[in-house]
Amino acid sequence: MAENQKNLCAMIPAELHSRVRTAQEQAGMTLSAYITELLTNYYEGGTEKMEKGMRTMAFQMPEEMFIRLKKLLEQESRRTGKKLTQKEFVLGLIQRALDEAEREGAAGHGADLE
Image 1 (cartoon, rainbow, N blue to C red):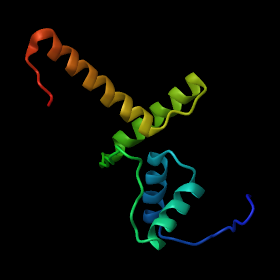
Image 2 (cartoon, helix red, strand yellow):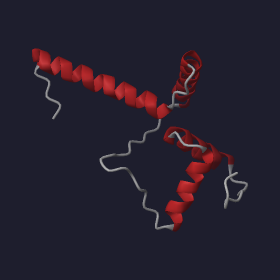
Image 3 (cartoon, rainbow, N blue to C red):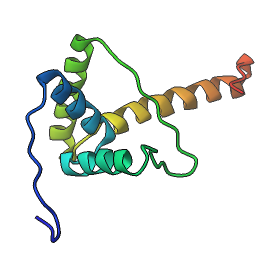
C-alpha cells in the first residue's frame, strides 16, 4: 500500500456492490482508484472531471447479453495475453461502424453523418 493511504471497509447492499463493480470495470479502473475518484468527487462538490474533448456514454443491457460480453472479453484477453476492457471493446465497435459508414458515404451512397 502506498504511503499516506488507509484501508476503508464497509458492508453495503449486494445490489449496490454489483452496480459499483460494473461501473468500475466499465471505467477500466482499479477498485481503489474508482472508489477514490467517487469519494473525491463527492467531497469536492460532485463534479466529475473529464479530459477536454471527452464525453460520457452510459447504457444498460440485458443480463444475458452482459454475461456473453464478459465471456467474450475474457476469451479475447486470454487469446491476446492483454486484458481487453469493456470500454476498449465498445469504442472499437463504434469506431469500426463509423469508419464503415463514412466509407459507404464516400463511395457515393449519399450517407451524410453530420
